[in-house]
Length: 347
Image (cartoon, rainbow, N blue to C red):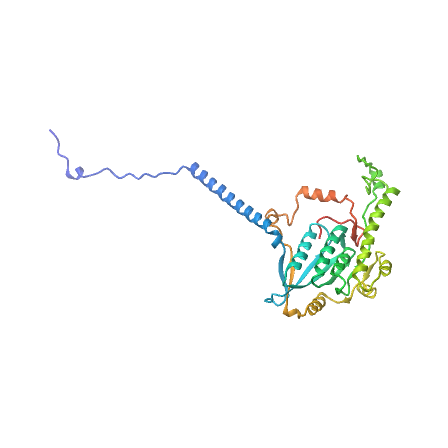
């Protein structure tokens, strides 16, 4: 006989079950890694694309304008091109680009070359001079000398041409007309510490200027001829671009001496003693404007995007540093107001 089931038990259903599904942590971590890799790849690709675009358009936009003074709204410009520190790569390339852009920009009515340099390499000085001569043939160029515009600093100032006005501050040092090839003689030191140079070479002059051997008469003859060629060019350029000086006058001044601003004016190496604002006012008046009526801008080369990303602006890699120190041993003729060798990368 079947027993009767109470009504309350007949309608009772099994209690609900809550199922908690725990995700596979390994799969989640793997997905995060994939997304992170894709994100990094996207960022790298975008930076690379921008870098390529910058490189492609570098010829047109490698020089930036920075407001200096005068009218902020005027389209007519006077450009400041600043040459500061030792004249050498890689800084020379930015100067050459700035000169070219000033020559091609129709809104640029005049250029002020601001020089604060003891000089530098012969080739770089002449490259800047050459480009400035092309610029001064179509637009007026004035010069403002800072604390020092000596040797190569004076050389490039000649690129402003015959009609230029050269201003020097009251405390400017200039002149130092001549060529120098820095060299140390370490033969006695090498003997004391037991160092000998045993360079393998294909000719007697291949290691010329080595600090580990004495210079021979043949060495001196070869390098004297090289220096004299640059020296003659230097003097000819001064005589060509200074109406008040003839070759005989330049010969008397080209002793390598540094001249003060007062001495330089007395010897016709400069035109006026004054500051940059005086030179700017004179240049503006020459092109028919007041300084406040034109926009005075400075041309400067921007850092490369990849340089910023890689940190090369503030630091150099070990191979680059090693290369710079190796280049110290490379003979260089210099229009330089110092007997010390140039330190690569210092500007």
